[in-house]
Image (cartoon, rainbow, N blue to C red; front, side, top):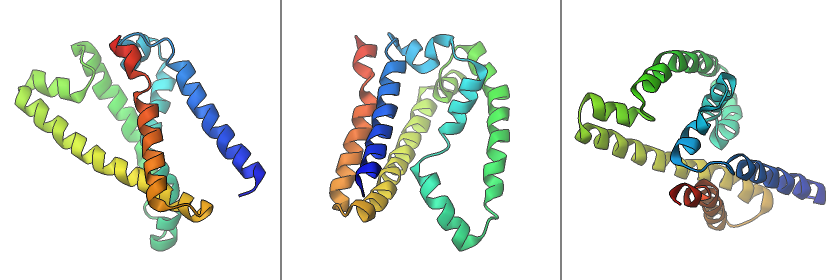
Length: 174
């Protein structure tokens, strides 16, 4: 990679982290952190819901999948916005009326704590495994591009993800 490539890469990463820190600066409690202080516009929430469906895996694997299997899988991506609209129109108002933040709170209210705990544990296991893949895939690409050790890149990316994720937690707990 040349100097221009490094400048663009570092500038992009610096911008993303700086913007994230700046936008969460006013988060004083969990309500502000989870619901944005109830000041988010509908289009911001919609874009956020859509963005959570895209990860490094999406951008890295889609061209390979298209090359290997053809473009038939693209119909899934066309259906996603429709599914997100239905979720936002049906479930978000229900959660808002019930004053719950998550589906797990809803499950506890509808059933019991055991059901909520089981669903939450299964979700955490699934997301933990998915996070490992989400970190590993870009590490493979960066390892090939930069010539760095794959294990070292996994540790670096994992550490950066953890730092970025928990950077707002001390403010929320204070």
